[in-house]
Length: 118
Image (cartoon, rainbow, N blue to C red; front, side, top):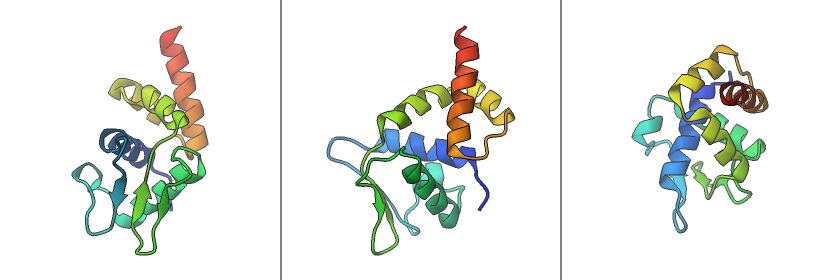
């Protein structure tokens, strides 16, 4: 499947909004939150797994036996990335660089944010 940085951003923003001290983000094919409804279940599941393998979700996050995906929390690394990709103007600049994976998205976000700060 082709990497979609917008999907990663939307997933992380949804996690940040919904996850609390006693709340998880539980995603299943038949109950996709409105903010993520523009993506197919297959695309969401692929990017959820990419986030997990890139250490953006904590170790307890997983696909359950019924095929749903449970995000119990995001990591400090995810919070750092969110701070760099939250602003729509910066996000457009990051997208113009053509990230093809989460590691390249992170490095591009760091580069663009650094240019803005300096």
